[in-house]
Image 1 (tube, helix red, strand yellow):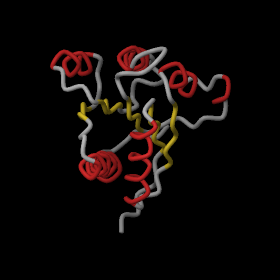
Image 2: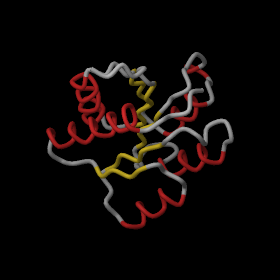
Image 3: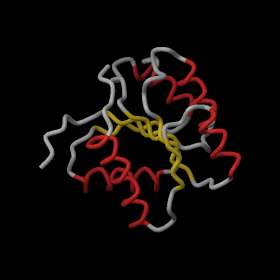
Length: 145
């Protein structure tokens, strides 16, 4: 059993089905990471800047970011995160249905840590989330805020 300290994960996802599958993957993985969920780009920025309903939000150790969001899309959120010296160190994994080459290229130009296309199949989706979780918890060293 890994004695790794649990991490704070922010999921920015507007699809309730994808949120549910992500929660299930985290629960099944038994790592005990805390998953916080916001539903659009504006809420993501409020969470990160601890505004409004998110005044007591923890600083996430990892962000899972959908690209296609209401209000501010994922590209705008990613650009804001990576342009802010207080947030730029947080790894951002783009987790999206888009396999478009321009979305992949733009995400990496904006300094995404990884780009993962959501599998359509439930079991593959859960397996992908587990791999992301395992990688960032057991393999990668994250900066402690």
